[in-house]
Image 1 (cartoon, rainbow, N blue to C red):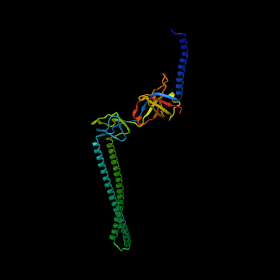
Image 2 (cartoon, rainbow, N blue to C red):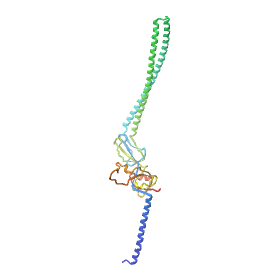
Image 3 (cartoon, one colour):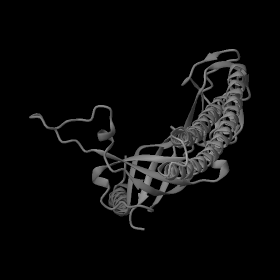
Image 4 (cartoon, rainbow, N blue to C red):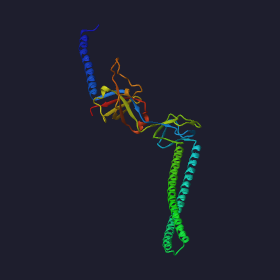
Length: 348
């Protein structure tokens, strides 16, 4: 049976205990309130990163695979070799076509030289015909005057006249031949231009064949880890076939989906605290890199259309990109897709 003294002590302790509970509750309440004034939190966030899918750019059989699943690779490392024998044959054919086209340029250039020589010959023929016309004209004039004085016969005069007309006809023919020779020179020069353009076309074909040949050697597009290996030795891959992917370990970031009501005090470069669910005792630091220009719903495959009579207002979420300040060791532990908790310090 409790004594009056014990009851008195209990009655005195009860208000003290209640007071302590109230103080603790007030402390936590005030702490949470003060924290909420300067922070915006969300757990709708995850690690993201650049994942580069590597697709086959030419069809062929897989000859070599130089990596294992999830193996670290560097940018430019050769990871896959395809059978390139048919591509090499196409390169040789393109090289032969270039040489043939170059020979055509030489032939066209020789034709230009020949046409120019013919033009020079035609030019000399014109000059010779002009001299003959001049002499025949002079003779005709003299015979014409002599005929008036009865010093020459009609037959001699007719011969001089015929010679004059023949010389003039020869001059006309020589002029036309010169014009034709000039046109031949112009045509030969055009043929050279055509031949040169044909060479350029064949060189472009050669460059394309070499480019196609280079695609038979598949290299890593970035530094990271080769994942999602989807090929085997001897497998025939077609153009566009996804062979593997490289997950970059140098561009890890966080995409946090904040409610639209949380964005009022957010801005670029604000400090962010990130806790990865897989490593709850290790806090990461970062900063806001950018805030999406539209809500996540607007970027969905079928964005909601609220222009109906049954409108229900729903708080939307806006993606916020956060870059992390991580060392090499930490970056090697976290993976794209991991869930995180994000807290943005809004008063810095």
